[in-house]
Image 1 (cartoon, rainbow, N blue to C red):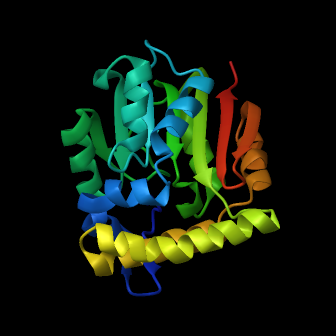
Image 2 (tube, rainbow, N blue to C red; image 1 turned 180 degrees about the vertical axis):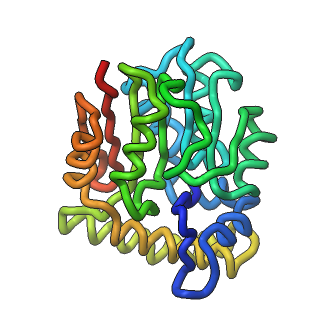
Amino acid sequence: MSMLREDDQPIGGARPVRDLFNETAPVYDRFNQIFSLGSGSWYRRRCLRRAGLRPGLRVLDVAVGTGLLAKEAMRLAGGAEAIVGVDLSEAMLEIARDKIGIGVVQSTAESLPIAEESIDFLSMGYALRHIGDIDRLFGEFHRVMRAGATLLLLELSKPTGPLSRALFSRHFAYLAPSIQRVVARRAETRSLMIYHWETIANGVDPAAVTAALRRCGFEEVRGERYFDIFRSFTARKRN
């Protein structure tokens, strides 16, 4: 999912991240399919179901990107009318709206144009590592969520075990050329690949995520790890 950092910091001092996601939006889904080794859909759906998403809940998907997580949420929430997607990239939002028919809003994650206590289920997929101040982010999430509402965060983190680190590094070494061959806009996809790798390698410590959620008023905070790289965090706003 695409970047929602409020200051839209440039990559290597060259150009804003927002521009990178706008430029790669048309090929992002194919990029993601290769990047995730085809595991994306079932994993997103599994996490949403385990977090308790069901029909009748109003869902806000922050950093909606091209709608990959929102698409799975639609299947569980009962339709597009239950979901609103937020993203900084206008190109990503256009694809999400046209592809799955959800309502979309262009905004940063740290300053949501959403009414207080109006959301039953808030999700954010693979964008936490792009945020500079997670306390501010979680405070904003807390503001828009109703009492008892659920928060689901999906993220990637650098592997901790020596074997998984070696496999992950090898995967990335061969992944970049594969993406170059399969998708268009080669210069842009190369930049996106580098950006993803750097943000994963320097991402937020999972322990810091759970601590920040508790500081910001969430309870029942849980973190799970899959294949030593995929992370999911769930929390609930106190009643």
